[in-house]
Amino acid sequence: MRAVELFAGAGGMSLGLKGAGFEVVAAYDSWQGAVDVYRANLGGYVRQADLKDIFAIGPTLAALAPDLIVGGPPCQDFSAAGERIEGERAGLTRAFAMLVCIARPKWFLMENVPLATRSQAWADARAMLVKAGYGLTETKLNASFYGVPQDRKRLFVIGRLGEADGFLESALAAARSCQPMTVRDMLGNALGNAFYVHPRMPGKRGVWSTAEPAPTMRGSSRRPMPGSYQPHPADAALVEAGAFYTRPYYEGRGVRTLDEPAPSVIRTTRERPRPKYLANPHPADPVPATAAAVLTQEQVSRIQGFPTGWDWSAAAVRDVDQMIANAVPAPMAEAIGGVILAREAGESIPEIQGRFGEWLRRSRGFSKQAIRNAKSRVNRARRLLGGRTFADAAAELAALDTAEAFAALPTGTRSDLRAALRLYREWQAEPKRGRKVEAVPPAGVKAVAA
Ligand SMILES: C[S@@+](CC[C@H](N)C(=O)[O-])C[C@H]1O[C@@H](n2cnc3c(N)ncnc32)[C@H](O)[C@@H]1O
Image 1 (cartoon, rainbow, N blue to C red):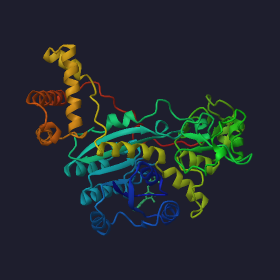
Image 2: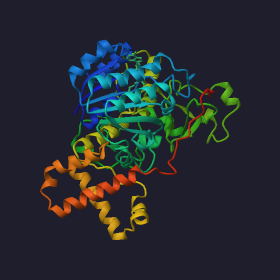
Image 3: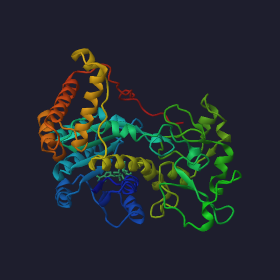
């Protein structure tokens, strides 16, 4: 699938999507420094552009005819760390939606802070996207379950033309790891998302992330990791301290052990503890902040999913901190991209969620066996539909009728599958009780940094 990225920053999202198998054919950002870093690492196709100017960019996008438009419009106007007054930057979320509506790709993917869902800008953008025919999956995902050691919760909205809302939710949940990734995993001790290649010389790196190119393999590379393996000297201080300090949000905890994910990376993550924090440390700090390591920019970059060796030299050090904080961690983008590609290829179907079986028993008097049959027929119909869901029930049945493999089935089987799908839709149409609503701080709450 061909993808175009808007608000591409230094390229975290593009890196991940490429890793998943997308061909990224164009990328845009207004910040020249970010464009330079993107170009140095990912490709010369990136362009500096102000995406407010939808008259200029709209026709170009339509001509590119991508299968996916992806983007993380600026979040400062929605972010818990900002004033939360919707200004020009919030307007760029509308610009993103307008550009999607102009180019009408089959798919889009948008990333933002969870608070964006409370904004007028997203309400407007959402209305445009729905009107243009996109079914939406709006979900909050935690990066620590998608390949990076960071407790970073972000809103992802995935749209596909013609789908029923929520169509990708179960597939995204299935791509989640069982355990959150910790900083120690990243450093290689637990080899979570990393592998060991015997270093050529003592003191050279032996542990590599699966998100980066592997070193050259030699005959001796396949030796098992020795128990005495020492981490690369650049990480030695961190490993030795066993804990690290990051500037907290609000009055949160500043010190974490290596056996936890890091908190969400922000521009000031690697600041040293200030006297105010040292005088009034968080009661749950596992060690005093003075005994904890302060992360290097390279470590923060890795915690944000950038591979070792990512070339930041095109930008000023302070700007790099901002670009890192802005990024979608590449392993997370790769996982989401993989879920999209699998669905596009018809390799996954949405799971039957909730209490469909219970409803069949209560309202239709189905036996256990009849419930099992109904569920397996829904799944079979979904597979015949290539994993597609449909906003419209009649369109779903019509699509099933035109599926070649369906037409080849005996008449009785076909009517069983149709009946099961109808029942499932009936159940879906019923109002559900007890849907979980995410807790977010009330509007107007400001961040209190240490
Ligand atoms: C949240 S960051 C996106 C980061 C990116 N998704 C990544 O993974 O690295 C938002 C980006 O929007 C860019 N931006 C802000 N205003 C813009 C505008 N008017 N036109 C284009 N890009 C803009 C910023 O420079 C920033 O790089």
